[in-house]
Image (tube, rainbow, N blue to C red; front, side, top):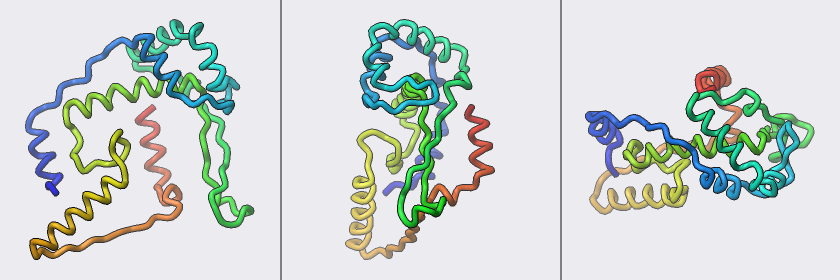
Length: 192
């Protein structure tokens, strides 16, 4: 396994190109609409994914205009950030609030626009090889199985070469309860 610090040192010797702004085309918006699941759940505006899918031919052009305005100005409306938060039971005693996980239901429009916005930096990072190959989370064609395979393969290779192998593993139950909320609030403010 390559040393990620060497990779980063070598990568950052050359500056990465800036992300170029590009217009959103109706076919991309249509693709995003088709990719959302046709559920009846909805955000605060009570417009479900199913309604968006049915009305897609009529709303594609205005929605494309709105997406291009968001991309060109860099302003993602606060109204698109509103969510209906519902508690979902995980496990344990149902009367204990700590056994519930909050689910935020965003509006369908927000999901479509966020997919479009997410695709830009994702493509840029992928095209310019910005992340190390050992980054398995949040990437297409990447999985926990591949991460486990790479780890096991590295361990077996080291053992075959009579090298020492050590590891520290942590199992974080209720991991979101462990997150420092002050840090996440600051991050959300910076992101918004």
